[in-house]
Amino acid sequence: MQEMTLGTLIAVFEEMFGRGLFWGMVFAALLVTAAYLYVLVRDRAMSMHKFLWAQISMPFGAVAAVAFVLWITRSGLRDIGGPIDVIALLGVAAMGAVGIAVLVYTAQSLARPLVRRPKA
Amino acid sequence: MSRRVELTTSRRGVLGMALAGAAAAGLGAAPAQAAPVRSNARIVIIGAGAAGTAFANRLVQRLDGAQITLLDARAEHLYQPGLSLVAAGLKPAGYVVSRTADWLPRGVTLVAEQAAAIDPEAKTVTTSGGQRLDYDFLIVAPGLVLDHDAIEGFSLDLVGKDGLGALYAGPEYAVRTWQAASQFTEQGGVGIFSRPETEMKCAGAPLKHTFLIDDIASRRGAAGRYEAHYACPQPVLFSVPIVSEKVRMLFGERGIATHYGHTLKGIEPGRRIARFETSAPGADGEVVKSTVEMPYDYLHVIPPQRAPQVIRESGLSWTDKWTDQGWLECDMQTLRHLRYPEIFALGDIAGVPKGKTAASVKWQVPVVEDHLVAAIQGREGTAVYGGYTSCPLITRVGRAMLVEFDYDNNLLPSFPGVIAPLEELWISWLMKEVALKATYNAMLRGKA
Image (cartoon, rainbow over all chains, first blue to last red; front, side, top):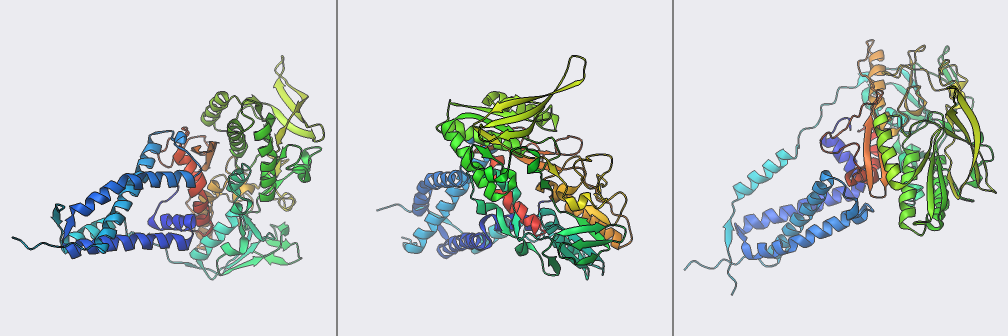
C-alpha cells in the first residue's frame, strides 16, 4: 500500500461489497447503534437482566462471525499460520460478539422497556 | 421475581463517548487535494488496461482543459490478477471481466481502435481505422502479447483438452485450464508447470498455479497418486533471492520436483509429450544445450511474452537489450523515454527490470503523473519509481505470502512487524481473495 487514507479505505470497502451493500451495512450498523444509544438515554440505566442475555449471546455471535468469514473466504482453521492470523480471527470474533450483544440488548429494550419500581 | 441491577447513564456521557469514537475513527481527516492545473495539452494514452485507465482517471482530476484521448479496441476490461483464481476453480470467469467504458471518467475520449503506427518524430499516432492523432504527450500502455506460436504444436484451441492449460490467455482459457487441471486433481498422474524465458507479467503466477493445483490434488482423488514438476528456464525459482529460497523450501516440503534450465519448446498433444530445451554447465564451463521429452497428464503452458508489434516497429524499443522482446526504452525511475521526453511507458510495456504487475502500475502511475504535470508547468518532476512490485504468492487454498520488493531485491513490507513477508499466512490470502480486487478497482478509478 502506498497511502492509506480514510477515502482509500472507503473506496476499497465500496468495491469489496458493492456500493449499495456497503452503505446499507454502514446504515444498519448506525441504526442499531443509534437505537442502542436511544434506549440507554431513554432508560437512563442499563438493565443487568437484559445485559445478561446479551452476554449469553456473545459466544454465539463470535462463532457465527468466524464461521461466516471462513466460509466467505474459502478457508479453514488449518490455514491460520501466524500471530497476525490469530489476532485477526480474534478481532472478527470480538466484533461478532459485541455486535450481537448490542443487537440483543437493544432488541430486548425496544420490546420490553425498563419498568422503574417506585422507591420504597 | 427477578432481581434487576441498573447502571445509570446520562445523555452527556453517551454523546461524549460517541464524539470520542468518531474522533478515533479519524473522521474529518480528508486529504487536501491540489487545485487542477490549466492546460490545453493533447495527451494520447495507448491502452485502456490497468495502467491506461488508472492514469486517465488521475489525469482528469489533475488537469483542467487538457484533451485526453484513450486508444483501445477491446470492449472488455480484464482483472488479470484474478485469472489464477479462475484457473483453480475458485472464481467464475465473470470475476475478471468488466467493461472498459465503465471505468472511464467524463472528459476522456475513448477511440475504440488499436494503435497501428507511432511516429515519435512527427508526434502522431495512427489508428487501425486510419485516424491520425497528434499528441503533445504520449503514454504507452498497451500491455504485452503472448506468443503462443512459439510453442511448437500448441494452439489455444487445445486448452482444456488432453491435459493442457494456459491461464494467461484470458478468462475463457482460464476456465478451460481448470477443466484440464481439475481432471488431474481427481485422476492424478504427472503434472508439469512451466514458465517462459522472456520477461513476463506476474512472475509469481506460475508458482501460484503450481501451489494451488498441487494443494487441490492433495485433497482430492489424486491424493497419493500424482507427481508435480516445475520446469523453468532460469536457474532460480524467483528473481528475488530470498523469496526464491523460501519457495525452494516450500516446494521441498510439498514434494514438488524442480527442473531448472528447462525451456518449453514444443508439445505433442496426442502423445502428451512436452519437449524442453535444457541448458546446463558442461565440464569445461560452457553451457551445454540438449532436448528432453517429458510425458505429462497435465501441462500448464505459459508462452514467451513480447511487446506488441506496433511498439516494436515504432523505434521506441530498447536496441541493446531484450531485442527479441521489444520493451520500451525508458528511464527506470521516471519511466520517461530516453530519446523522446514527451513519451512515457506504463505497465507491462516498460523496459525496466521488474514490474509487470498491477501493483507496479499502482506505484508507476503517480510517478508518471508527477513528471507529466511538471512538464506541462515547465518544471522538473521529482517523483521516483523504485521498482516496487507486490505479489500475494498463494501457497495453497487459504494461505499466501505477501511478497513486496523493489529493483534491488529488497523486501518492502507494507505492514512491517505485522504481516511477515515470507510467512504463509491466512491474512495474506484474505488480501488476495477479498481485498485485492477492491484495491485494484479503486486504483482504476484513480482513488488509490
